[in-house]
Length: 95
Image 1: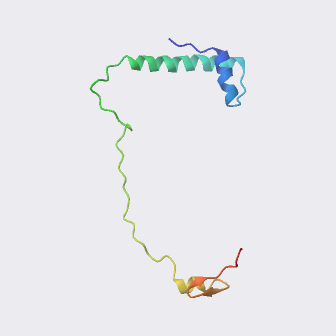
Image 2: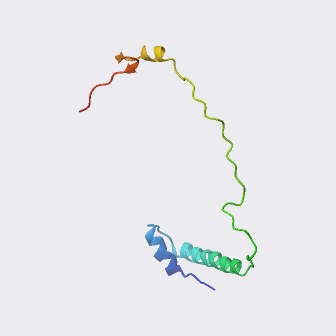
Image 3: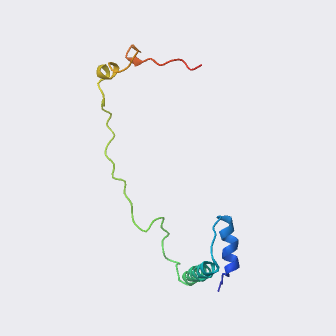
């Protein structure tokens, strides 16, 4: 049975740069002890014939087929730029 003290909580809170009062540290120590002890109870269960799982719910990807379409008319788009050549937008050189 693992018991956390408020000093343990202060030690770990320091890593996360968390400030807390003595009352909060004592409360977190009790809660952390409960969580760890619950994990110990789970170790007592017989899981010999239980298949491992990666997620409690089966997930399915429901995706539409990716079909490329022209979102913009090239000529209409090129009318809105200052300079273009051979169907491409001209931009200033940066080197």
